Length: 121
Image (cartoon, rainbow, N blue to C red; front, side, top):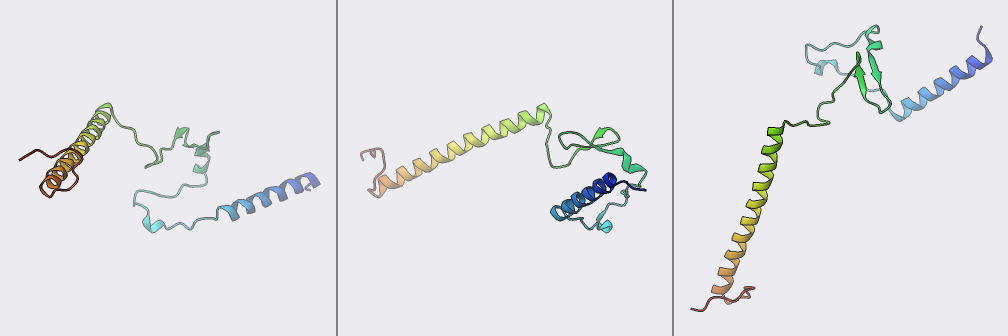
């Protein structure tokens, strides 16, 4: 027979679960989108799932890596990325300088304000 304390605890757990389901509803699962090599876990395998204090998910004691959440680059990939960024900045500065020179030339030919005095003819 259930004691009053156990009944209250069970009702509190049920109320908490209902609140959780209202905040985050159960998602419908479309298994037709799953790859052929993926299957649902069984009830016996559910004990293999775990979570730590920071909310990271673990499977059988190993952290589950979430694809798309973090990118780890090798040192070579980092060096290439930095080089591409620097060359992009240098290219942007060069484009700006070329644009300013083209404007200055056009402004001098059309007697418009050029920012710097135009060369005499």
